[in-house]
Image 1: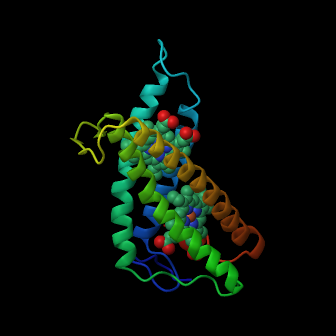
Image 2: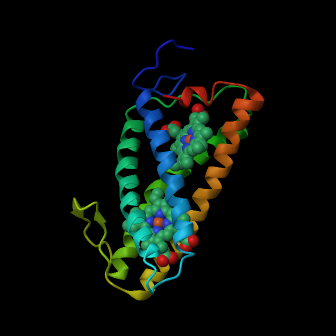
Amino acid sequence: MTARRRIENTTGSYGVVAALFHWVMAVLVIALAAVGLYMVSLPDAGFDTRKITLILYHKQFGVLALLLVGLRWSWRLANVIPELVDHLPDWQKVVARFVHLSFYGLMFALPFTGWLMSSAAGIPVTFFGLFTLPDLAPRDDSLFRGFVEIHKWLGYLIVLCIVVHVGAALRHHFVFRDDTLRRMWP
Ligand code: HEM
Ligand code: HEM
């Protein structure tokens, strides 16, 4: 183990920047999925404004996730990717890398389908009063329903990836007792 954590990644460990990106986005994405699943179960209209308020926050924090994953992916491309611990069988290394890449794909695809869905519904996407995103699709009901469906299934998929990924991380830490979790810690 190195005594001092570096800013950038090394072949043996994630650097401070990658680790901060990881944990900030882990909290953000778990919260977005949880709020997303909860808000769709709320009643649509009436005097209860909880659903509309949560959707508003979900959209803006979803845009934040898109901005962050753009920066994170650029940082990843500019850095070495630490090797996986070597006691793993090859198939588990393939699954681990596949889940990591799926996360990146989903962290881009979820905000984009959310944005497309809002455009097709004719409701613009704003970002905490700072700017409004341009519409990506024309206003169209069947298009809207299609994007809702895709966004929903991508949401279920990221929840599944999170379960597998967290399960694997905990297994490394408590069963194999290796450095996998520690080297992702900033
Ligand atoms: C990483 C980012 C995101 C994640 C993980 C996420 C996840 C989810 C999940 C799990 C649901 C519930 C799906 C269901 O059961 O029907 C949902 C719904 C929704 N999301 Fe997202 N979302 C993200 C980003 C966004 C963005 C950027 C927008 C819009 C700009 C957005 C707009 C919506 C809307 C409007 C709904 C409600 C759809 C409906 O009426 O059924 N989401 N999201
Ligand atoms: C909260 C529980 C979580 C734990 C304990 C955890 C743990 C870890 C660990 C230990 C690694 C390093 C794996 C290695 O060295 O091979 C890792 C990597 C990664 N995690 Fe998580 N994670 C969590 C949540 C999440 C969530 C919610 C996401 C999705 C947004 C995520 C996305 C990623 C990605 C994309 C990588 C690969 C990083 C890269 O190589 O660029 N993690 N995680």
